[in-house]
Image (cartoon, rainbow, N blue to C red; front, side, top):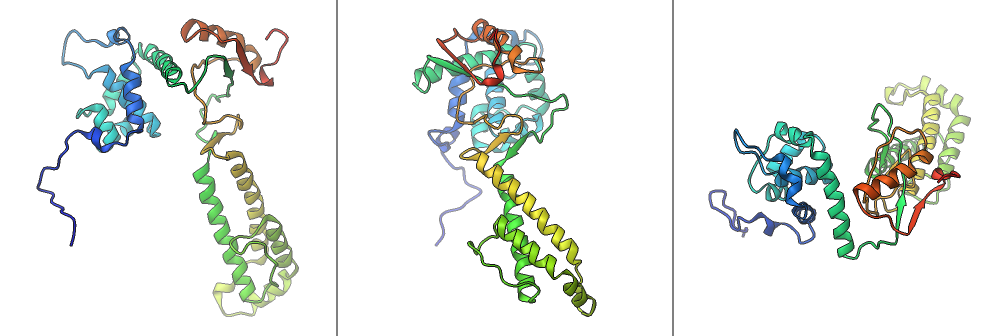
Length: 314
């Protein structure tokens, strides 16, 4: 017996919102954009030509795309066509990547983003997720050539670490089986620790000459590996494993971290932002606080910043 499956029959319900979980990010984006005053969208009204897509819909689609790590117009366009949450937000419309890109470079887009921050903060206060007693200021440096490798991603580190473990275990087992090196006492049978890899390299280094002679006298071409290259490979694994373990320690519960600011976390809310050309944080604190007060919200009693902002004036 199989559950009914018929591609030629219309399936209900047609309301895509029913297919979304109650805590789906699409609902938060919808309520956020709907809370922005109508006046903020007046600049997007067209008085001639073909009617434009509603700016609220376009903003929702773009923000939702960003939450799914879709930053290019083409990727956002693809999501609108195959993502249930994006289909619901777009309500059946399918704006092209050109339309998406034209919308987000509109001169008044900056004002819309500002309104998003304001309404986001209002929602956080209303839902009692934050209080108004303090704000925490922090910054990051962005290089002129925006380097896509500025962030370290947890999934990538875990994948590379897993490959390293598999390769080191394979080499160790092969050399042990061929009686090239003696067995190393191991704490964990699943992977070699940094100390065990070091002993592994030392044991192999001691038998390099004997191993080389064995290879030279063997007719099996599969054994013809350069022992010195294998030792070098193990020391490379040691260096990489040290880095991967340090990365995993920095991650903690996070999915990524910034190389320029390892203390930056994901579990907090960004309520305002500013971009400054100053090379150090000390010169950005006062201008940023002025910007917050003029464009976002009244400053609270407590303002917290790290030592990078420390100066007599600040």
